[in-house]
Each structure stands twice: as structure tokens, then as C-alpha cells.
Image (tube, helix red, strand yellow):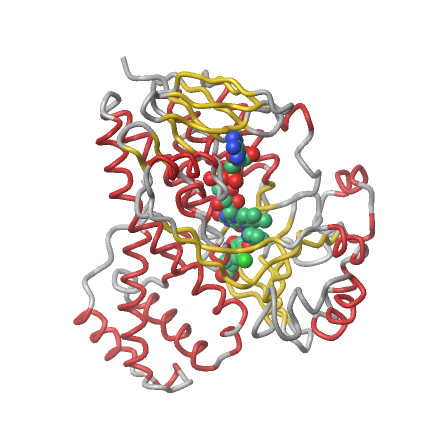
Length: 466
Ligand code: FAD
Ligand code: 8R5
């Protein structure tokens, strides 16, 4: 019989992994620092939403949870870009409504995953935080909410304890993991757009329709402004969570030059005049919500033999601009659960294989997430960029087996991230060659372009979902 598995962290990835492992016959105990959100009410109470895409959905489908999650999600068909002059337009993410992303509430999703894991037989221990580990003895030390500690036998430990992982710190004290943290230099702050009309939640629930949304609900909104931007994702209750992304330090505008709501209000009046009136509690939101930092985490090693392994953000935290952090972590759980089910008694080999498969892919999405910030905040109005995208759309229509936009490979397929990255680079090179600096895709001979595409690149793998 396989060793029992100890998981640190019952967040998004920990809860889903626990459910998948229990479903495959493993005995799973999860130690989670925070109290049970189903009892305590989700920490902070603010509605924070995440974009769920095909990779995450695929993992939820395997866990039998996709339908439940989608029922509470808001469809986002594309990117709604709000220009400086107040005009806006929707750029679809995919070819039709089968290629959309979904806005889900972090709190609701986490609680649903906890329920599912518990139903599968997982034992959760809330208010228990990892305080240390002795990997030679196979023991971990846990601290409760009052700081009282105890030790526990835990021969196989998996850390799903997020970007600030305590298990990672304990592993590093045992052997170097080759950690590198690259700060982006930009940070973020969340603000809230309440349902239009200021209706109470109860009234909104009854009004049906979409009239309770202050903005188009079925889109991810972007206010690109060059070196910085705001975005907004819809919530089911008709509200939106707005995120302002800005340089952390340096010349105006940065969080350093906008230390309080008074300064920030003037900045929004000048740069986001159409957005500001939608945020009635601007001052309390701005002064009350923390500034979040953004960085990418790289590790040379994710495991100590078969004794400890890191997954999700604990292994590979990335910047948010592709909306793939959770999606990537959910994909981790599919890969790891399958490997462990195949060789339940060979944790050293499984952990090594997991790292071998996932590390190139997490490096690729880390790079693509960084690149998508530039695309979101700068390139939306760049005529050469628009011409390239236009030509890409035409090639994808004419030769769908040979051209697929990188965003679609990342967001709507299960092709490995590393493949999407490499194929995207090759396709981009071809588009550059075809356009040769032109800003008008209409002048390109499409028959010749398709011939060049077919001659240069092999067909794409089959991407139908199965
Ligand atoms: P977490 O979700 O961080 O969970 C870690 C858990 O471990 C927590 O419950 C924590 O309490 C617990 N823990 C921490 N320390 C200890 C300890 N010492 N002992 C025990 N337990 C501990 N991703 C997307 O795909 N799409 C998005 O749109 C998106 N939007 C985001 C928006 C925001 C504001 C943020 C911050 C992130 C967003 N992400 C998004 C990224 C996504 O949230 C993460 O990639 C994902 O939550 C990682 O899951 P995780 O379980 O690895 O870590
Ligand atoms: N994460 C997202 C995208 C890509 C959208 C596009 C971007 C907020 C802290 Cl910044 C961001 C995306 O290319 O049109 N999909 O999903 C989610 C994003 O930010 C999340 C909400 C976020 C960390 C704050």
C-alpha cells in the first residue's frame, strides 16, 4: 500500500489535488493555515475573481466539477478595450462562444473544491500552518492559531502552499533548490465597481437580465495606457473587480507618486475618466486595499527525492497577465495525479518525472505571461501589431491546421505551454517576414502566404478536446 500523502495548503491547487488523489485511493491529509472558509466566511469578504480557461476547466472536468463551477461563472467572450477617447470595442478571444474564458469567484471556487475533496475522503486540518520539517526523519512541525506546535510523521509531503511557500523554505534549509525570484517592478491594487443602480444584492438577484451591470458583463475590460493599465472582471452579482497595474516606484505615475486616494483620484480623472464614476467608494477602496507585488519564481528543483514536492504557485508563481496561474496549477494536478496513480509506491521517480514534464511548461507560461503585459498595456493601438494580428486571423481561417494564434493555444487547448511558446515564435517570425514592416494586412497575397506557411511549418497537432 502506498504511503499516506500529506499536503500543505488547501487553496485552489491543494484542494483540487487532494480530491484527485483521494479519488485514486490515496489517504490524504491537508494542513491549511487559515480557518475553514466555509465556517469562517471567506477571508476579507471582498469578491476577488479569477479567469478560468480550458486548462483549468479540463482539470475540473476530470474531477467531475466543471458543471458546478460553470454554473456560477460569468462568460467573458473577449477583451473590451477602452481607449483614452472613451471609445470601446470588443476583440473576441476565440472563433465563437466555444472559445471563451470564465470569471469565477476565488472564495466560491475554493469552498466548492473543499467540499468535493472532503466528499472524496480527504481529511482537512484548518488553522494548522507548517512551521518546519525534518526530511531525514520524515517529520513535519505544525503550528496552530495560538502558536502551539506539534510534530507529525509525514514521509511524503506535497507543498501547495502558494508563492510564499513554507514547505519551500523548509526544503531549502535541507538542500538548495536554486531559487530565483524576479520582481516585475510593477504592482497592483483592487477597486470595486458595484452593480449599476446601487441595488441591494437581494434586489439584483430578482431583477434577472443584465441591466444590473455597469459595463458589458461578458467581457474582460482593459483600459490600456502605455506604461500601465486597469482591467475589470465581472462578478456574478453584477459587480466588477477592477485592478490597477502600475510601476511600484519611480516617476509619475507609480504607486510611489500615488500614495493615497487624493492623489490617485486626480490621476484617474486624467487617465481613466470613464472608469472613475463607476467606482463610488474609490477613496475607501484605494486607501483600504493593499498594494500587491508581482514577481516570477524560478526553481532548479521542485522535489527532495520522494520525500517532498512543490506544486502550483509554491513551485512556479508567475505574473498574472495571461490569467494562467491557477490554470497552470490545475494542470499540474492532472499530471501529478496520473503519474502517482501509475506508480503509487515510487514517489522519487514520480516527483522527478513530474518536474521533467512540467518545468519546461511552467517556464514557457512564465515568459508568455510577462510578454502579455506589454501586449495588454502597450500594443493594442500599435498599427504593426494590429496588422500582424489581422494577418494571423486570416491565415487561421484559411489554414486552421497550420496557424493558430498563440493566445488561443494557451487559452483554449491543452497543447503543452512550451509547444505554444515555440510555435508562437515560429508563426510570429513568418508573419514578420510576410508583412515586412507593412501596417496593412489587406495588401498581402493570401494564397502565397498560405503556401509559405505550409512550406515553413508542420501542421498543428490535433487540438480537439477529448
Ligand atoms: P494559493 O491559492 O495561494 O493557496 C495556498 C494555500 O496555502 C492558501 O490557502 C494558504 O492559506 C495556504 N498556506 C500558506 N502557507 C501555509 C503554511 N505555512 N501552512 C499551511 N498552509 C499554508 N490565476 C488564473 O489562472 N487566472 C486569474 O485570473 C488569476 N487571477 C488572480 C488574481 C489575483 C488577485 C491573484 C493574487 C492571483 C490570480 N491568479 C490567477 C493566480 C492564482 O490565484 C494562483 O496561481 C493560484 O491561486 C495558485 O494556487 P495555489 O493553491 O498554488 O496557491
Ligand atoms: N491577477 C487575466 C487575462 C488575459 C487577458 C487578455 C490578465 C489581478 C492580481 Cl492582468 C490579467 C488576464 O490578454 O486580454 N486573462 O485573465 C487575469 C488578469 O489579472 C488577474 C485578474 C489578476 C493577479 C490581480
